[in-house]
Length: 417
Image (cartoon, rainbow, N blue to C red):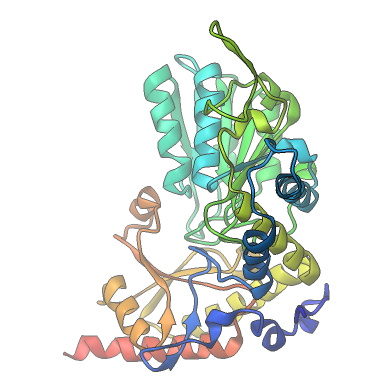
């Protein structure tokens, strides 16, 4: 039975009960209870997701869209149900949801399948200084191939986007605005709907990197009016190996496929080929069927929690952690206040390298991320080589933040050696 407390009130989110659903949280690391604070990289998985994948492999595994026997029909139904679940979760139609390996592949799909077809010399792509490499490098490569130019919206001292600069950059030559919904480094929640209005006013499209938003907040692609929305399953309690791309139907229908092969074709002759309808047109070969089943289970789990409660819990933890860190004069914290960010905090400690800090914390049982977080251009803007990053999710507690602060105290001893 599920231990998920069904509530839309953050105060009623029973985290201690919820934690029983996550087997890995019972582990000890270096003889300390595991405190997992790296969910921005990849979340842990509840038993409901693990069991759904196991049941599929044990009872229903077969290839889809190919067989007329029971197992194939069951697998097909389960995989198509996963599309429907994700579509409902983000307020899209099921055939507008394309399954990919992850956010990176989804953004590459947009860059290649849309960019090569629509970008020409002198066209402009507008990004931000907050972007993950996955939303920078593909567009840089498209610019190299097509002669387009990439521009970056500045951030202010608090890590917020400079909307006046955005308004100045997004102009008649802009063809695409591609922006992170939530920064994976600073946690900044970006006003993507406003950026979309700027883009659409100039005839450009809006692509949203939702890797850090879909795990934590209610996403309505219709309300955002985005043309594309990319995400990963493994950051939202789902398995690795599956993510997705939402695209407006009229945009997707105009695009050529990204990959070619089995299952994405309607007809093949020695002279040529025609393509399947959406979304299969963009899902070549045997898809991640078991992973789709697991993703559907993750969506069901989050829906039971209620996304307003999920976001409120993350911001509650972030607010508490920021209060603790601001009391320490040797801790530099990057990014805006808790109300303007998701459950991510990047910080440094004076005279200590982030990797050294992370190593000490690991010996205290605390798992955080250290480095440039696949955002090297942002590190240049911040004037650092890297940061420590603690990120929170539904299974984290205030007590674990206290353990984090105690472990940071242990790390300070490195300065005395």
